[in-house]
Image: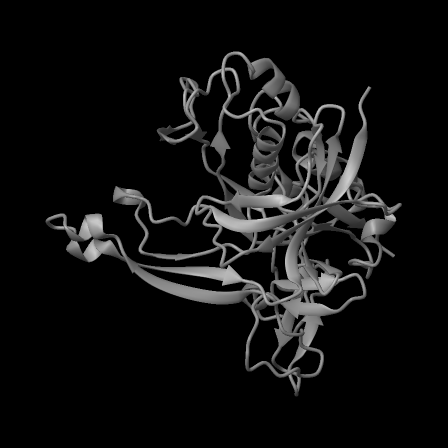
Length: 397
C-alpha cells in the first residue's frame, strides 16, 4: 500500500547558477562563445535530480544488474520521454512547476499580457485588451476562423511585453535585480535575479592551430539575493522511498550546486491542481467575450493549437533532455554524442531531439466553442506529472 506524502522543497543556491538549455559552448557547428543562462531549469531536470537523490539516499548507487529491479521500482524504468506516456516515476508521483520564494512569499510567472505604456506620463504598466471586430486592423489572424482581432491602441508590438513575476497579492516584479532601481508609479518592483558575467579561455582550443580565437568565451550566470530561492512541491511514495531528506544537490548541465531543503507540506490546498485555492488570486481579470488560459508552467503542445485561438500572446523556449533506461544504461558518466533515434541502444545517456515549448506566462484567448478541444490538447497527464502543462483558466465575464 502506498504512502503518499507531499513535500515543499526549496533549492537554495550555494553559488552562481547556470541553466543553459540549448545555449552551451559545444563543439564544431554547435559551438557558442557567448552564452546566457535561462532563469529556470527544465522540469525534466528537476525530475532527474529527484531520481538521483532517491538513488543516493536509498543506497542504490551504483546501478548494477543485481539491483536494477529495485532501482526501477524506486525511480521508474526510464527518464522522462516527451513522446512517452509514463505518469509516475517509481516513488515520484507528482512534481509541481518550479516557483520562486521571496521572503517566504511565492512568486509565479505573470501573464504575458502586460507592456510598458510609453504614451503615459509617467510611463505605466498596461494590459493588452483583445477585441474581435470586423473592419479593424488585423493583428493576429486565426487560421481556422479568419475573424479580425485587434488589441488596445497603446500596444506597440509583442517586443514591448514584459516577462514578470507576480505574487498572489498582485505585486509584480521584474526578473532582473537592478542595484540602482527606483520604483516609479505602476511599473513593476525590483527583480530577484542577479546577473554575473564571467569571461574565460578554453586552453585546449587556444593550443590548436587555426582555432586560437575560438578559445575565448563569455558566460552569464545568475545568483539570488538573501531570502530568495527556488521552490517546488513533490509527492513521494514513502513506502517505496524509505529515505528522502535535505541535502546538497547538483542541477543543470553545468552542475550548479544547491542546498535542497525538504519539509513536509501541511497546507490543505493542492499545488498539483491548478484550479485549487493554492493558485487563487492569480490572473483573475476576465475577458469580455473570450476565455483566457494562462500557462503557469512551460507547456508541450502541437502545432494544431495555434489555429484554435482567438489570440495568443506567447514566447517559446527550447527543450531537450537526457534520455536513459535502467535496463539498458550501464555508464552514466558520459553522454552519447548522437541524438536519440529509433536505433538508440541507451548504453549511455543520449540527448533527445529538440522541441519548442510554450513558455510559462503564455496567454491564450479561446472562444467557448473551442474550449474543450483546447483543454484536451493542453491537459496531458504524462507532462503534468512532472510540472509541465499547468494552466489557469479564467472564464469570460
